[in-house]
Image 1: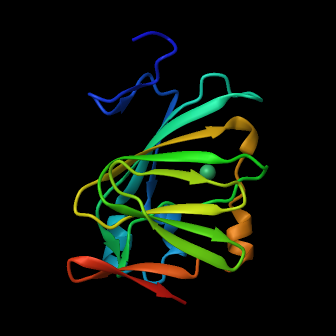
Image 2 (image 1 turned 120 degrees about the horizontal axis):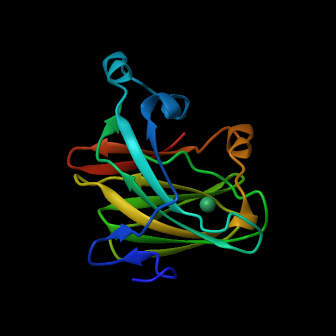
Length: 178
Ligand SMILES: [Fe+2]
């Protein structure tokens, strides 16, 4: 392991993260259709991000891992908030473990793709992206993206949010469009 190495597959861990943060239900409550009062009071952790941002400046790559825990809010499986990139830079998502889906959105167009262990997703810069954990175990994935791409969270809200909902359905899931 040297200063150029950022990830170890055997440990499935990011080496020397520069930032770690968690997102709780209270951070994402506006994204879910129905937030039960009891769950709101419990305020569970939905996901955790570990980030390796060595240079934090133009031209550099950022690597992060995200762990989405297993669970539902109302009928909706836990998901990441999702975002567009502010600038025209794409991104790679690599699913390390678990069973999930990717939800991609470009204006009114939305697509759902498989995103389970071993899947690599190339996200074109035009598409907003959200990951959903539809499994019984944590879903962990790695992202590789540019500092230059930035984030645009507001545009999804301006467009009325993701119209596709991933709901718990017996042991599996169903995809519904609002
Ligand atoms: Fe992104």
